[in-house]
Image (cartoon, rainbow, N blue to C red; front, side, top):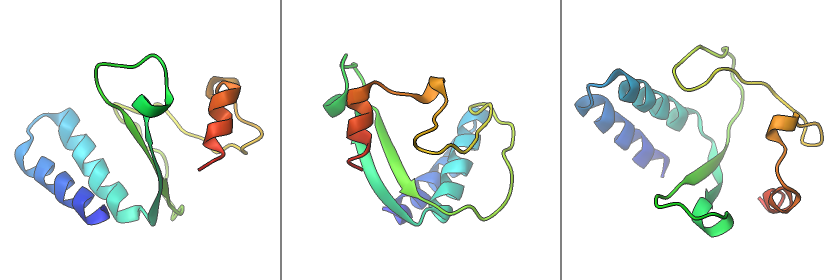
Length: 104
């Protein structure tokens, strides 16, 4: 699956001309190179209400920090590390969702 991500990212970089999409495909290529393994794939349609007219999947991966720093981009304003029992208020989910997250 990681090879497939690399192939899709490279195809996107080859054929897309929009700066937003170029940045996205470059990041997908970089992530595919850094991923150790997939831990889980969460299908929003199966686990959340209300249902949307489109599909959303979250892919959870196992990665290791190798260095570097957060760089400003058009999608992310920042990042930080938190202990599971010390999440900031904006990241806390409803109890039933948190219970489901521990299944991962």
